Image 1 (cartoon, rainbow, N blue to C red):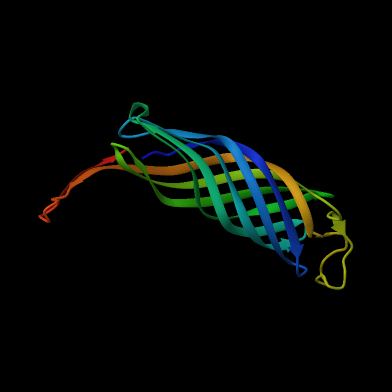
Image 2 (image 1 turned 180 degrees about the vertical axis):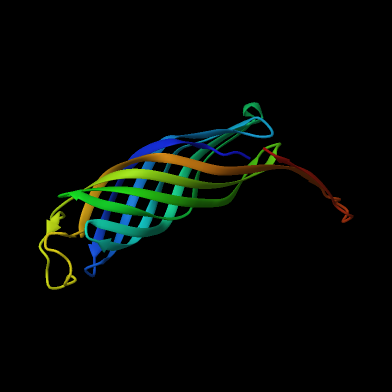
Length: 219
């Protein structure tokens, strides 16, 4: 088991739709690159994540220039495991689910900054190795990131309309509807476990009893 961690940076693209004066629906795709790594124990093994990303929906509440939102969707992570002096290597793309939330603030026309937390669970996967057996792995990740978005079209402060709350001052509402692109950076920490199952089964060709033996090693 181990706890890979490290910094990362990447980009995002998305689209928001303000379907009421205060409620927003959106979708976002992002990709991150970095080096989240750890030497797992008790046996010597190296595990790292060098790329990951998400495809998510967003539901948010708009208050003036601020946007408070929850988000959930699909996540992927490219991981590499090297154990037993290189005898066991596993490069794979893990796929799972992610959920989290954040705050975004429109600080200038067409520009906004965000702070976001995401949790991802990639479940358990299995891979077979000749003369070794099966390698079972499970991985979860927590990510905290800051980002900067540029929004196309009319985004900055707009005049108050009749659909806006009567107590909303003019030129404080923000039109969040439209596409955007941006950059982000942050820190990620994971929880990784792997189990190698060594086994063999002897079958009696005459229809007699069978015998199975195995050893389970945590790496």
